Image (cartoon, rainbow, N blue to C red; front, top):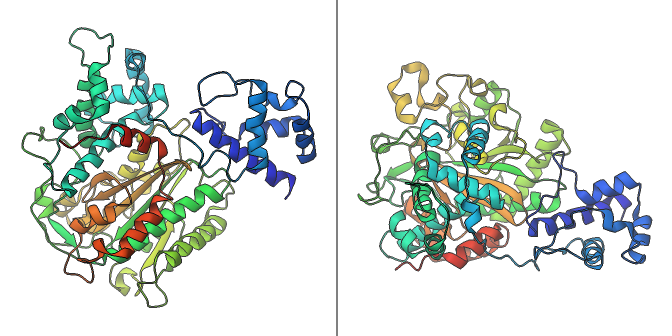
Length: 552
């Protein structure tokens, strides 16, 4: 093993330790503290080995970081610092991975000490980083802004912890046949919300309590950022649920491999779209009760009139769109042996091979995908040479337009939602968002003249594509912090692997192939077990499992 590779591996191991301590490890240029210290001081492998032999108080290794963190929040002794470094040096592959204990975050009264300056600061960040969702109504919404400020204070996506916990409890209630949960009922049964009710904070006249703000933020999230997924869709996808689930597993395996095998890969965003070719009539849209309905809001999701429109393929010629907008891409068939049941392993290999080709031939950057967003389409539509659709399923990996491609400095978690809302697949003439019609919805496009047909519109996370699109948006911060959001009909749900049997069967035609029996199959459970190992967001799961609603 070369000096460089061993130092790099130790650097990555130490980064995991810092992540456990909730402390920043990499600088703005992606340089880790250990690697930077080694370079600055001219050490090689032999020199580092000699420093481990020295007594802790004599070893230069204690200078790696003047503020060396502790997972316990206490000050480490020099001996303890050396032991952390020694573990990273001697066993970099496993150091601070499976042995990490994740505790649920605790919200303290001082976290809710939100000043006007705090609100102004987070507002300015959102205006710059996610202008597509940060509109005038968002700016006036103090509840959601407060939870974002709390998240800044604890360095965790607290707003998402709350909203995703609600979403997951809602799915579980629906799946187990319990009464549908609405926010003001959920906050009464969720353990974390009960703690918020008892939290003693200083508040001014007419100010909300933390519990009031949490409840308001949940409702605001699903108005301002993305509508919550309705679990009884008006259309159903006419395609194979088992094959789609295999490809979902392949996408998750691909993301997992990037995080674990590529130096300095994180953070990055990967938006993977599934394009389907046929739908059938489903049920009336149901998902929130009359008591939960709020006033109309200006979201991009399709309303009831949209859902009743006749099916029309919105994607058109995908490769032609990308070529017109001069966006680099690679593509390949992923069922080229004629066997669409070849499983997720082969398709995961196709993801990795095409990504490597894309990175080498198109992007030509050693650091990619760090601090970048990139996209893929799995085209499952039937062959149509006029639209450039292959006989087999096709994987297309590409860069999105520049206005939603690169990460800003110190990105806020809302940045990820803003990029997906800006563009998934651009229309011809999108021109990095300068086209005044780039935000039109499917319904609006139908009303415009023939020069703005739906198949020429900008596709975003808020566009339902007549029920024929499934989007998985991966927000990747670290090996143990991979958030995945699933969009269907322009609506969002925090995705967990079990959703291939709890949620997706509701959106697929049960009469197609083995869709009716797949949820109960051994294959489905094997896929879930496989994905559970790789789609990890340990801090959220510690929070969710500690505080989940009783469902009563």
